Amino acid sequence: MRKEVDFLVIGSGIAGLSFALKVADHGKVLVITKDHAEETATKYAQGGIAAVMYSPDTYEKHIQDTLIAGDGLCNENIVRIAITESTERVRELIGWGAEFDKKETGKYDLAREGGHSEYRVLHHKDQTGWEIIRALLHQAQNHPNIEILENHFAIDIITQHHLGTKITRLTKGIKCFGAYILCPDSGKILTVLSKITLLATGGAGNVYHVTTNPDVATGDGIAMVYRAKGLVENMEFVQFHPTSLFNPNERPSFLITEALRGFGAVLTNRMGEEFMQRYDPRKSLAPRDIVARAIDSEMILSGDEYVYLDCTHLEKNSLIDHFPTIYAKCLSIGINITRDRIPVVPAAHYLCGGIKTDEFARTTIENLYASGECASSGLHGANRLASNSLLESAVFSHRASQDALLKIAHLSLCREIPDWNAEGTVLNEETILITQTMRELQSTMTYYVGIVRSNLRLQRALDRLAIIYRETEELYNRSVLTVKICELRNLINVAYLIVKMAQQRKESRGLHYSLDYSGKLEEIKNSRR
Image 1 (cartoon, rainbow, N blue to C red):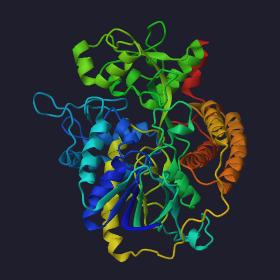
Image 2 (cartoon, rainbow, N blue to C red; image 1 turned 180 degrees about the horizontal axis):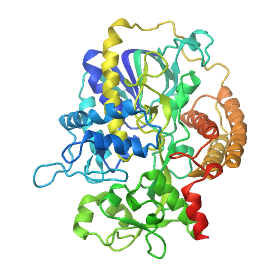
Image 3 (tube, rainbow, N blue to C red; image 1 turned 90 degrees about the vertical axis):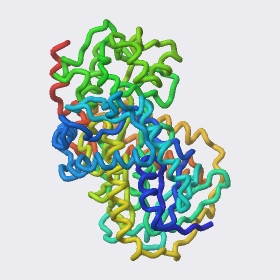
Image 4 (cartoon, one colour; image 1 turned 180 degrees about the vertical axis):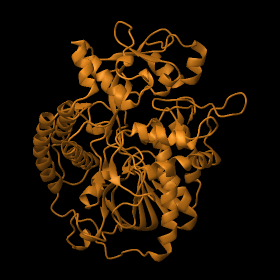
């Protein structure tokens, strides 16, 4: 089975759909999504999208906040591009139908989150991502040039390798010609040929046992590019959201948005004592890497499984009005946030590294773009500033579309690409091999490559990953393909990249904190012993 399009988009979050809408008037667009179209990380983004809207906020303030949060590793040129284009991209989302909360005056009701010096986060209650996806999907589903294939899985991007050409990471001029797509319902593999391909596959939170990410976040785009010999960078910087709801039987973990702390909630220990002042003068509104490590430290010192987020001192009606989803969720498990503290624990949340891209979202593979969480644009550096992720997707998908439209007329399809060869494979009936390996992978990453790391832990993780990599590759090569085995293979690739890049970073910086290069956190621990 073959399909030919001008633009192939893999992923249906804000990055994928905004790109699709911008190029759809200029050619045929195919959007591939592995689940229902709305089931993306964007849907679960509670807090909002950061943009400069009113004084006293300025682009320069937002730029400096981003650079500070990124701990010296942001690309300042990329930061300036993203921030100075923020207002225009938000207005575009509004034009597509996204509705953000307003005050009675008609001005947008901007929130403030950790690391931000001003109120600049637009939101729709605590369901901002869902509102954005609703608006974008409505536009995409009604565009005659956009076709959305739900429940289809991208196996690999197609390059010269599939024509028999040997490719290494030193090979120049690697080109993307499309992708092989698995239809799980039929078991058939579709060969999609495209002139331009955009990867918008999201993050890889499921490499860890506890994550706020939906089940679809398995690092697919990053693994595909790595296998295709494209450049991937900064994978060691995994952001753990400080406050996911402690509810051990639930996966993914329910996110308690940082906007709640911006609204006035504070972190406390079991005795009701605030503790963040011991770690940072910004207290509960410090950047996420600092807050997550502080909570981890408090749990280790106390032996508790969680800390608390206290919003019982806030005005009841206003609290419920601003955070109806959190209120309802907590109430469903017996917690009334107007009178009860919320038990919270850090959870794997966002990958700051990924596929290396430039200012137009171009990867190191020709005719292949990447946008959103799967990309490493240089915006986040060593730690993402809250609510900059939706902004990054909107800005760099826009810039990708601009660049793609300049070159599309000069590109042609490569029709010599062979169809997928499944000869010699058999149906794998030993599903326990996949499920148990997934548990082992997640356990290894959670305990050895979590919020706090060490050289010894990283080496142990690498040793275990080497074993499950060999076992999984053998299973993959002889099996009829399923989504589960492909996702496992991708997560193992991603885990390897996280560990190897963490080993190479001989310092503690941002989201990568090593006991072998300790700093303020260790000083606080020692002073409290």
